[in-house]
Image 1 (cartoon, helix red, strand yellow):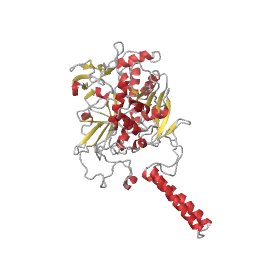
Image 2 (cartoon, one colour):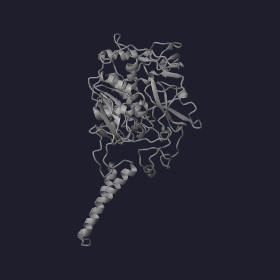
Image 3 (tube, rainbow, N blue to C red):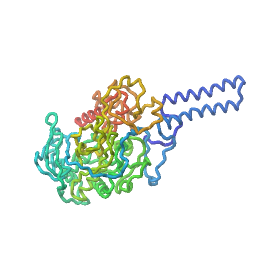
Image 4 (cartoon, one colour):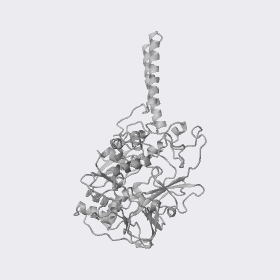
Length: 542
């Protein structure tokens, strides 16, 4: 595990260690020469030798505290951790501190009228799913809109994708090659829900549960690893994983998202426990910044692990790697906190609840805040009267590292619970690599001011450089707290080496896991696109 077991005075960078070692050796050897000439006594030699050892140690401490902003002391368990609870302290990664975070925990009601379900949000979805509605049809929340006709035999229950709200279907938008990209619904003033069939969670068999989730649309809430696709009805997961915190830039506080819905969250966990022969694992925030909600720390029927460390410590893929690593030919399932709540509402209230608490963030947002809305909310309405219009904005559904760029006509992603708005960086920096630049987040310590200023930063979308040769730097391994050779893996994907990809652990990763590596990449490689291409190739071959 990438866990801190203690501390070391010397910094981890090999080059700096060599400099300090040579400095210590110089101070040790020089008094010995002087002592051999009789000019220095034994006490003076001991004194100088002590100083020689202390100087590199002090420099190493300064480098860790100032240059990296990390503590050199042993990692302490937060006081709120139960005695003996599994605690994993990760040291690799980087926290991207940005302006525009939400400061208040209050949740406001969003005034949004149009919503959409977007098939491209579902990895592996057929470009043209089988439509069950037409423009002008009136639907209730939970009514089927379409199903994916790929990967299912005629005798298998179809995975339905259902309406997040009630209202009228006003558009079925198509993209390239007539692929369906949006099914748009104009919301009713008064929400109406489709009443789901009754099922006894305690008595139902696993097969009955699987069929029920397919028919009600709740199966779409579950994603499997590898590939990050909806699970197949014939697959039984080895384990199920839920992360109760996020370390992504400006990410919403999951304590706010679960507040008032604790019982539904527990009901969802109870349902998940019925769907696997293995365990349901819950990753909790052990960074000590804020005590997790009792809904997480007192959750029943799950095995809890506490994590601390910089981003991506909150990613469920990182947690899987350190709890029970995914091996070849195994499947595990993952869900977010609000997906678990929706699953619990299905069994507790017999309705498909697509309600989402969303964090509206970013430096171009006048008032960053939490809003209550539904899956697929229109972003223009969500951001109405809350944008700085003096600058050209990039609207992102998700966080700045792994989210998708949208327009004001676009919609919130199917699994997203955050909207970020930053400035568009469509400008060119003349001699940008040579001249001192404004403060911006970077994993490099080339400038002294980056040692002293840890943010938060004002950022834009400029990559500050063009795409370059794919060189070996070791940057990816420093950003990803997993025991794997990340850069050789990406080179294997580029050359379509299937055996090497499998051997280097491609099945453990999805796009969000390597988003920080892409941010730090000197070669400016589109790592998330490369990884998705590799995963799609492996999925087609499986």
